Length: 111
Length: 397
Image 1 (cartoon, rainbow over the protein chains, first blue to last red):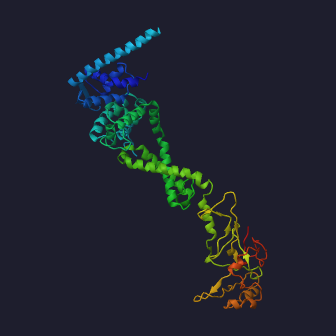
Image 2 (tube, each protein chain N blue to C red):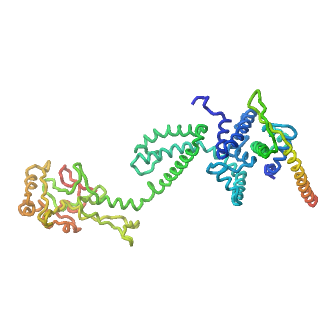
Image 3 (cartoon, helix red, strand yellow):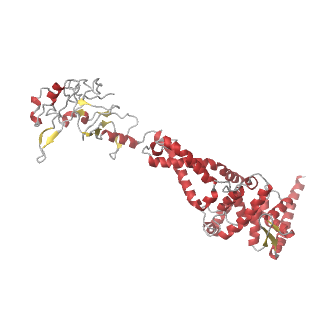
């Protein structure tokens, strides 16, 4: 199965979860998602998702001056974001359970 | 170009992403690009391999960014997001189109093609320089033919000379997108025009120079038969042939190097095997070779009747001009040809030679008969070449 197609649906909740854990700038969020196992994630899609969540009012941002290199734009979760994350987590859990159940039933039938 | 001017890989990539986002509102684009620049710098700091290896082509990158940011896919005409793309999304059909476009964007085959196309850019830069010169050649050369090396000013050597700097300029233009992005629309229009021009030129190779001659070329060839003859002194309206010994010749038929009859003055064009379409236009029958009968006008000297300008009555004929035949003793030729008096009609009997001047019956209708001229020494057309430089006709095959 093409993981990148699955990622599209869960990118929002994944990014929200990473940012809730700790504030982060784009590349930092990307690295943490990869480290968590989402290795197929496309760089640009993480930046796009951060942008969309920020514009949707689910993230706030602040700039941190850097001694070396460019200033970093950090993202932080806000209340709206936390609510969205909670809802999305529930949706995901129900969905994942449903899929698990479906696949386990079939696996049991095949065995 | 100094090394300072050379854009870094990050700058070049960023500029191409910027171009892909050109249709977005300025504020939105600026915000996105700020982070893209940061991202590219981070990636470049992490790896030495080209950005494309990690991120895909700038076009793919921009498409992913837009999709994830919830922005519409790039509109083809570069309108702002308030333009066509936004209007499309308002209708159900538009949403379907958008979904299909997004699916196309996401398909691996499309992405691999899209990321491969930029690899072909250097080839396009060369082709575009060459196509520009072809256009220049078409404008400066009277030669309608098509040549692989542009015939600038009618000379392939000049074209070759132009080709080298043109390719260099084109490649430089292609390698420096930043200074050109503002004129992207103009550049794209010029590129399109050149691509179309090259295509037309390529098609012409098959239909024009190397292909079967077109019908209008036959027609033009036919018209050339009827065109005026010209010599070093201007238009030739009549020819007075003489034999090597100075004897004036009558009824000589003249042909050019292709065996085509020469026609002087306003006499009729050759009679060719052509047929007429129902609407009266000429059509060339490819099954039959185009053979042209000698036209009445290729018998020389032509009779040139003189009409009274007031009554329109035939009052005589143009006398033969006085000729001195070289190499054959001036006196006999001069005496025979010098004979015509101003009253040409009375002259024929007075002339010592029976063929010294056009006879009264040598009217256009009489010469129109297809019988070969009897006065010609060779007897039949075409004439054999005379060995000596005389004013005699030198038609040859």
